[in-house]
Amino acid sequence: MSKFKEIYTGWKNLTTGGNEESSKLAEERMKICGRCIHTSEKVYLHCGVCGCYIPAKVRSPESECPLNFWMIIPAREENPGSKL
Ligand code: SF4
Image (cartoon, rainbow, N blue to C red; front, side):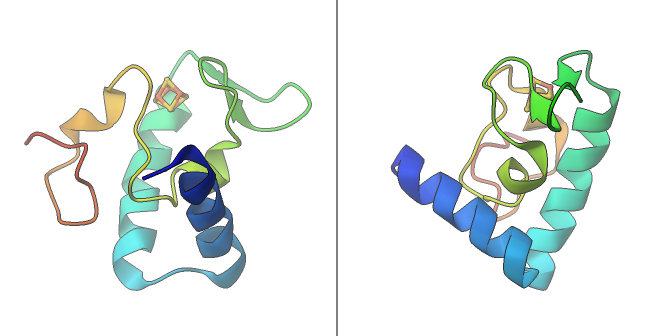
């Protein structure tokens, strides 16, 4: 998936609410980002590694954590980056 499509999907799901599965995945990812030392609230809530707006990034199922911290989330079809 192209970066543009990842960003588009994340913002679309953020503004429309997405479906139940993407919402659950976003919730799990937000828990991890919420405990991550790279989360920054300077200017906007973003990942200090990739610069992405976290509330949108976590809602793009194809997106991955640049440090693979999301890998602990159990594998589901909508989380292809997970290995568990
Ligand atoms: S995407 Fe990964 S590195 Fe960035 S804030 Fe979230 S857990 Fe941390």
